[in-house]
Picture 1 (cartoon, rainbow, N blue to C red):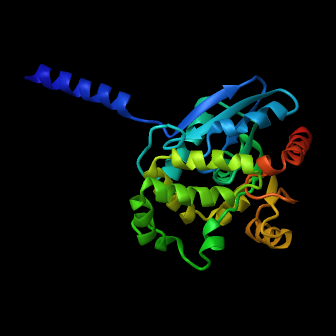
Picture 2: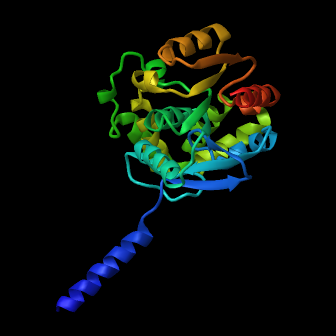
Picture 3: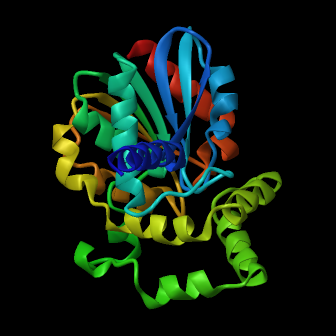
Length: 279
């Protein structure tokens, strides 16, 4: 009987090891100085491949994809914190140093969190159209404790059929880029996302307020912001939200929506290369 229990426990542990899913997937390209590429919400790590090809110098690029998106198995909530912790563990485990991080949207949020957690390992950040507290712009005055997984809006999103959800995805995609040929791609990424991850993962992002930790970021930071809806409004938001980040340069990119690397690729590559070379 005792032997049976031991065998049962061993099988349970083995099964647990095989059944656990990781929050991140990593694709590595090239050799040289480490650059961590963090995509935005629903986007795959492969969105950065053109940027990798455009980088000057020798870089070992780490393209990250997230659980629940792009065919990756979903994980339980809290989603964002689990991804953040796995990224921090990945950098520690692989002994990465002098790391440069390029993060778009949610990837920019993760970049800040990682820089706060590992100040001696992170050399510089490039933050692409990312705001430390999205909730303040979308839901002014609403405190974090009012943002919950269980809400009428989330229930509505979870209950949508494919046609309804596609209409929502299409509208969102159209608002994020000026390039018509990219709208179908953005819509596809939203549609293939695990629905629970999409709905509750976004709730995680609404709860974030990284303004309170910006003063702990030691890395030199380039912030590229889309001048949308107007350059005056967007610039004011960036300057206000990043006020306590010390080593920063804010550059507003004209004629661009959220996906600056789609709408203004030449300018984007120029600014990124100039920053990384002189960093």
